[in-house]
Image (cartoon, rainbow, N blue to C red; front, top):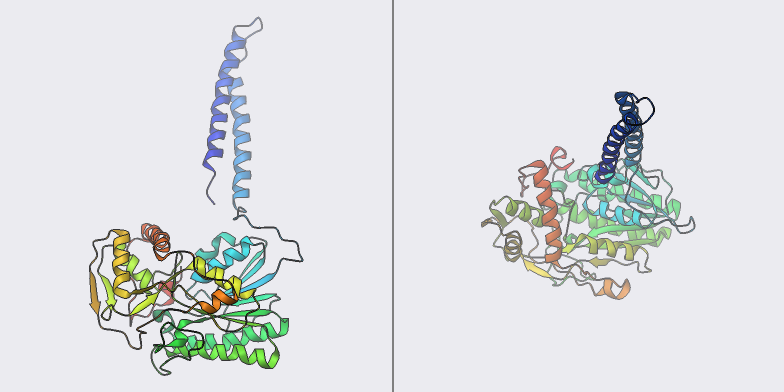
Length: 409
């Protein structure tokens, strides 16, 4: 933790005052009727006392600095829940953890740090209401909790294609483990599914009733089909074991703490524009995406978890852009000299993506409130600081698999 500059300044002033008083004391006594005191001795004693006080104060400041955390609410035991967040050190997970901690709950994070980072949750480590478990959800967890937010799974193509078998295991074995835990504990579980369950959709915008258009053997299938079968598991456990389930289908999300090597549209475009590099668009730029800011998503996850609605629920921003339009927006927001360049389209890349959020609006009272431009400004500021710390960043493109060494910091 950093030292409080104002406090140190006051202490330094105190030391200077001590030196000054020592000097004046010695001068005053030298003009009195008594024998003059030894000026050097008096000054030395006063300075020694001041140094002692300063040292003691600094030690206390440093010790307390190790325990300074963001302010959290104080809930009575009857209202405070113990909540497990799998993937809680990741981009979305860490923002969810922040909100749960601010609310005053006890939070347990389970993360293998493949795409997540300790840096994202460093400000909570050591807090009495926070526990970090570096573990893999493909192995059973033995914890006692009231709620489970199941987010764990690499979510960008360079990450989930790096080890497709492990991606499938995370969505299947990992979800089975979390459902088994929820069943044993009678805990409510929310699973973060994805708009990728709709594949390359023939329906636009996409409603929860749409069954999708997914290639089951394509390069994206390990993620798309993994999430689809995980949804099947959720509702099988609901029907057979009466597990209390929630399913959120998340559309493209952006914000601070995005992994700079995850190969997503938003992070790639911002990083390239900040460095005045060419912005790479795969395809003709006419494919569409809808981008929501991470704070809106976290609001939706919290509202869905505590609602009575137990069917799949889209969480996304219907504000739709072509990829070309979005690239131009990023360039204009940064005032960059970057040029947009076009490269061949990637396999099975969806050509349209826009959520119908009428279910979320009606059943959990949710809709996004942060505009894309407002969210972009915050995200650009974040990546600008990241570049200032690490220097050059070369974003990951299609066919370039993001390894652990690059993605975890």
